[in-house]
Length: 79
Image 1 (cartoon, rainbow, N blue to C red):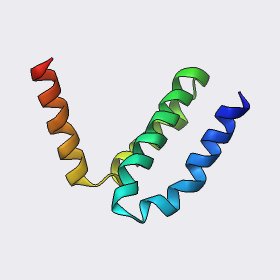
Image 2: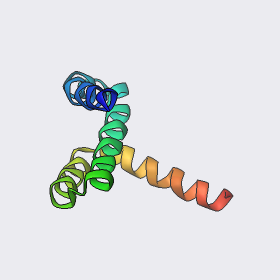
Image 3: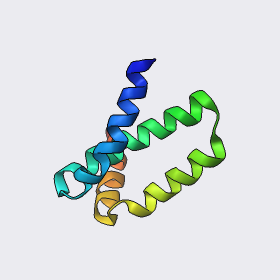
Image 4: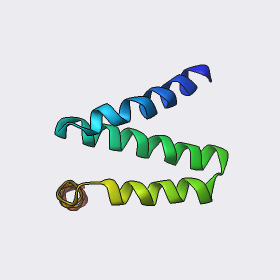
């Protein structure tokens, strides 16, 4: 349990330096997205976490989003 606390803290603190670089944006976005989805499922903070997830959608680069959607379409066609 303490490990998850430190992992969440590490994700939050490292977010600012990582978003400054193109290579770090996708990784930290996926990490924070997973963390908040976990909080939503485990703790039931649907309103707060849903708002944060919507905020993350606005912070994502549109080009990365279209690339992600294309990859998901390709994986569903292959699978």
